[in-house]
Image (cartoon, rainbow, N blue to C red):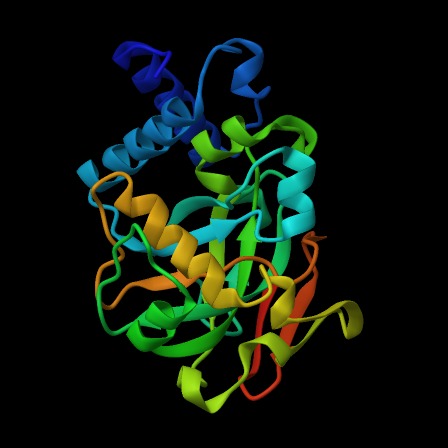
Length: 262
């Protein structure tokens, strides 16, 4: 930890205000190059504390940077993690107001819901699958608060991994019913295919992201609680959207979901 508590609180207030006011900012490491990974997560935790104090409910957890190639590019060995809020939840087929966002992008997700708590260290895919109640399709809307989507990893962790809005589907499957690695994913924008992928794009198996999250939380004396909803990370690259766009996601065996931007 390189930053003092007052600086962490100030940066959390700044980043959250940028989110709530749809206002961009330069990445915070430009002014604070000394900040470390612990500082980044402490800023994120302070943003969460601020929201809870105002009555916001934490709807779930999320993983980002969930491809080995991207982690190698960024010089890290684990994904980054954040949370999603109740006000970020959009009903299937619902609307997202772009004037509440800065520069939104969408990415397809395989969403986990846990029946048992999970805590690291030592959490692995087998433990995740045993603890998972079911999986669902999801679309995450990411919206970095950093100007032109330009940031480094510490800055994006502090900014709650660009969390913004999300929609989840109602068709569910138990982990034993599907091979998540081979689940085909098709995302369309305005009726045209914009991305294709399979579940294995997320760290070889989406459950790997959940295990890494449990180990990350365990190192901080926390756990994934029973009943938690977790976005396991983008299966494909994120796609930019604007007012008037309609986005549909189809995941093999999990049906389709959609959202529109107004």
